Amino acid sequence: MVRNTRQREAIKAAFERADRPLSPGEAQTLAGEAVPGLGISTVYRTIAALVEEGWLHTVCLPGEPDRYETAGRQHHHHFHCTLCGGVFDVNGCPGGLAALAPPGFRVLDHEVILKGWCAACARSKKAGAEPEAGHVHTPECLDGGCGPAERPRRRAKSPARSRL
Image (cartoon, rainbow, N blue to C red; front, side, top):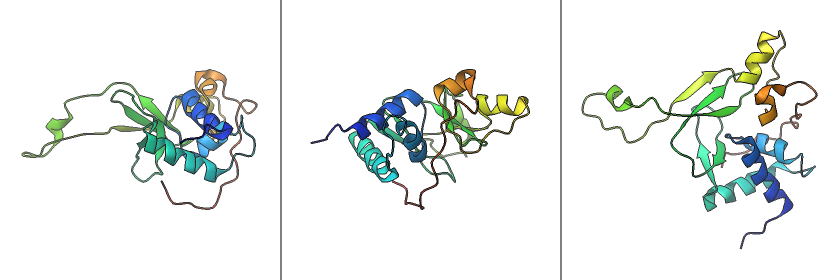
């Protein structure tokens, strides 16, 4: 039996509100707004349980820690911001990628990852400001309101932990 604790509900709400893949640290920052003092170990345990239940899906990026997003989405790809580290959904698919495989190979699945600057970081750069590395963008940031007063602060890095 799964207990619906304040922490679990806050973590789920963080993923729903963000509406994009989150790292455990990003989930902790966003959920911590509702539950001050939320520990990273609680976030890791909750994410593992939500993945096992099928509520979250793992997003793998080469050379990066896994991110997680709500399950049940249509096929889509991702954009990785090289400044803030955020991962965002890309709607659509270019299609025809099987033609890129060597002769005789059979493509069963694919993932396209675009890299560059997200809208909020690009706006900061254009305005002459230096985007904050590791800043957790909220939906409001991405809609144009990303300034120091609106930025949730990242917690201090916790000791290295193994990935889920």
